[in-house]
Image (cartoon, rainbow, N blue to C red; front, side, top):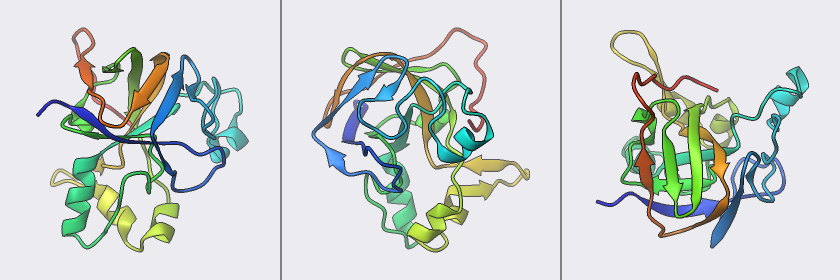
Length: 179
């Protein structure tokens, strides 16, 4: 299966879910045009409160649609955009990508910076959902499944149905950690 964009989302306000759009425009070094998290420095409210001068490593949020398939088996019905992502993907294991992997959406490029670390707000959306998105594996390691974050390395439009090309960084590859 060719990796593709299932849906794109943005919202000008800091809301939990984001409405689906026909397309979004990525702005180099900033994020999604018109989205509340767009900016060169952090836009997430708790991070702004801690240090508003931090670089924004969370300009674009991506979630694989396959996660929604898995969540349905545990009784959680989640649709694209409802967890606040900007791009819903299918056919690429974004959680397994290394730091610095680049995803090409036509001319636009997102460089992956790390894993989304979900907060308690997710349980307000659906009770018990946080336990499904942050788990402990058999070796006692925390596993985060709520998608990945990235920065815009090249601007351009991203449309639902568009293809995704994955470019890995030079070795050695480093696993994603929370950002």
